[in-house]
Length: 202
Figure 1 (spheres, rainbow, N blue to C red):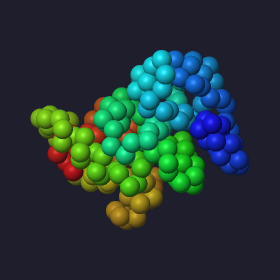
Figure 2 (cartoon, rainbow, N blue to C red):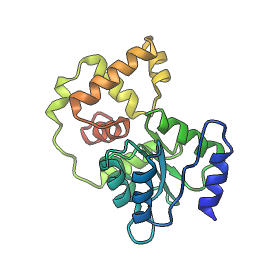
Figure 3 (spheres, helix red, strand yellow):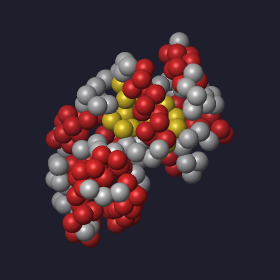
Figure 4 (cartoon, helix red, strand yellow):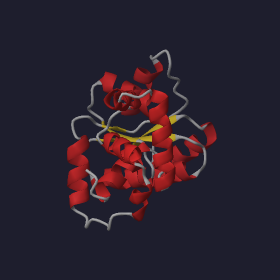
């Protein structure tokens, strides 16, 4: 019922096509590898294999599919691990319909997305449970502007919001984000958020 509801909601959007669905983690991987969707909504808890395992398989498959994790819990240790392996976002299942649709669009556009109500609390609580790693030497390779961009990305700011804050163009922001991710050997903005918190930059 939940899958059908999500499918109907997303299929009703003029710019979104629903390619398929799956009832468990193993099937989810098979469907994603076969259909190569731009975005997959992945439940954290599923039969056979959980969403964390499935997300790792999908991300590692080379299909280019971005993973948006869904859960009923606002603080879930799986979320931290999901972001570490490259999931692009995290939303609560009970989020308003318009937030879910927006999340799919944001993730499809290549930006990170965490449920607005828990972004900062989630990262702070989960990282607080773990001993902080020594600050990565890669931080010193960033220019002052790239570090500034990293801090704004970790605040959940979009490229447009960062551009407005720094009084530069969105294309300039994209260039800084790309350079920052390359220097830190990070896959995407979601991993940049985790990196910033792990290294005490936030």
